[in-house]
Image 1 (cartoon, rainbow, N blue to C red):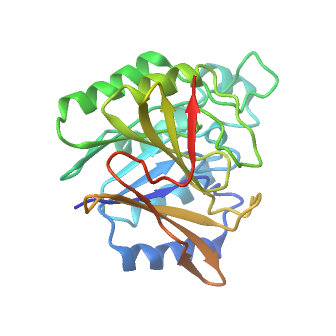
Image 2 (spheres, rainbow, N blue to C red; image 1 turned 120 degrees about the horizontal axis):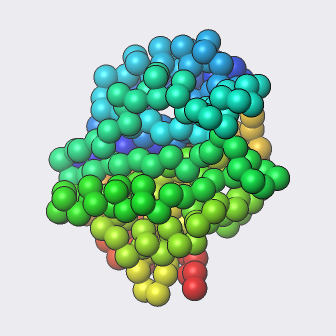
Amino acid sequence: MSKIIQVADIHFGTENPRALRAFEAAMEAIGPDAIAVCGDLTQRGKREEFDAARNWIGQFTVPRLVVAGNHDTPLLNIYERVVSPFERHDSYFDHLSEPVILDNAVLAGINTSRGWQTRKNWAEGSVNLDDLEAAISIGDEKDGKTGFLICHHPFLSPPDAPMRTATRRGRRASRRLAKSPFRYLLTGHVHVPSVTVVEHEGECYIAVSSGTLSTRLRSSPASFNLVDISGEDCVVTIFNLHGDRFVPEKPHVLTPNFEHSETRVAVD
């Protein structure tokens, strides 16, 4: 009933043309119902990079939800990064920021990126808890539909990711998400795919991180995810680039109670 493609970290400016062509072919073969773009569409936030990103995303006709990443701010313009960090991003993609409602799912996004922060690594994530509550309220209104929250930064570091993250208010956001009607958190940023059941005091959600379609690889090839909730179980399949095509890996099959997940993290 709903097949959702999750992609992140396309980084136009350092994009991988072979991966983009292979992704287009995979999209045609899979026939998804929606696309979730989890941030970092550009490398330096330049207009020509946003032009390329908009043209590429615009070719897909299914519903799309796009959120910003930390690279989607004007990297070399410090003034704009402080005063209006996402004005350019929003001028290109604000029309794709609204919730997506499918037959049995609802997708809502929040911006966890900041143009500037009072800490050494300004690229780290930060959750506005009011924004989170507003997104959760959309799930409350769509009773009976599976909720997907879309953002760039993981709330908690994926267990085996080579890049550790320190998202501000991430633990509080993770606890709140676990108690909400949303069952899935789709993110990017770390450039490697992962599927993790996150548990807080017996309440759970699935954290799904997507890889990258850029040349900025870390410990895995270019990749994207397919989240399929067409049947009773949820099936998350990671597609890795091999040569000129994307090949599906062994799927993660998640029962309604998540009891058969291969990766489970219990958090206090």
